[in-house]
Length: 217
Length: 217
Image (cartoon, rainbow over all chains, first blue to last red; front, side, top):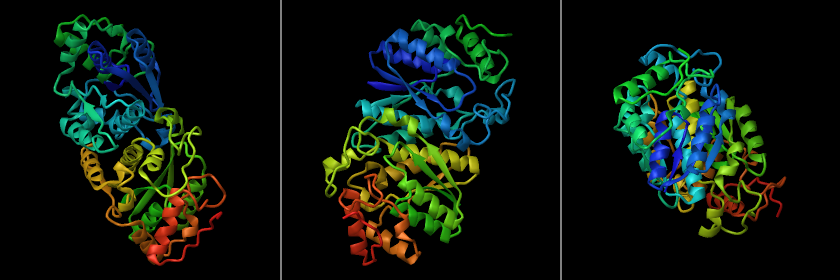
């Protein structure tokens, strides 16, 4: 059984469906680390309800002052437009976010007597996010196996898959993609212009799967 | 330079003094994870003020419901009396506490552009706490070096020292031990009876250093 680090985004929603289909989804953990909006939470709650998976919330909003300025949690920094490039990708990084989330997920897994946690890092994240890379996942898995009396394992089934591969898998699993959220801006609809919206559009196109997302433009 | 994970306890207060004496204390991080009392915080704030080290607070009290029942954060479980034994030591474990604190400290270090974090795990903790052992610290150090664009290092200078060794070092560094807190109970004075008070008393005795702690009995 596994506890899923679940943002309500496309990748982790497919992960939730995959583990639920395997009968291995023992719970999901959504973290509030001071994001600009709660659309991701609404998507997470909706998918968990549908699949009958318990959703816990880790309220980390009080940590916001520790993280410094970045586009996801700081009002002082705007969300960059256009495709991912090293400079604007770095602006979207909450420092060490994945280790923080995975450490808390492991604590929750221990409390629930679950022996595994899972996250949806994929190969498209590698260039931008050090904590989505194989080497990081391998090293953290090693530490998680030693953090408590019984080992906790870190599952990362998508780490060598592209986002288009994840879209294809999601389509097979009948994921309702309109109930997943990617956009970094806080609008009612996906903006269609920020780096993560462009990456989302491209993934559907590459996968040959209909994109049911409503974009503002 | 290093950011110190600082509880206000004896061990981390000696660590703070050691790094300050070396001119390497770049900040300290105190975490509120739902402890029964704030005496540790008062000690932490007092020592940081005296040494001119900035103290940040990571408010994790909202995570308390995720951690399950344990003697440090749950009102439903009493603090065990008597010497450390495996059964009562396990009751004092907040699951995966050190990884959570070290991950947040690393995030803060990245925001401050500091390349190192330090914690005061020592050899006396090894039997009780998996996340104070060499193997865990080595593995987590490996993950921290990969979590961001530049590596973060994990310093653990006390990991092969006993608590008595730490008391001796603290005496050399002129630490005011009366401004450090160990007791797991929430009294005005150290209770003198819980496992951590007994361990504290024994460390002073073994070190041959005067114990200036006021014990209730």
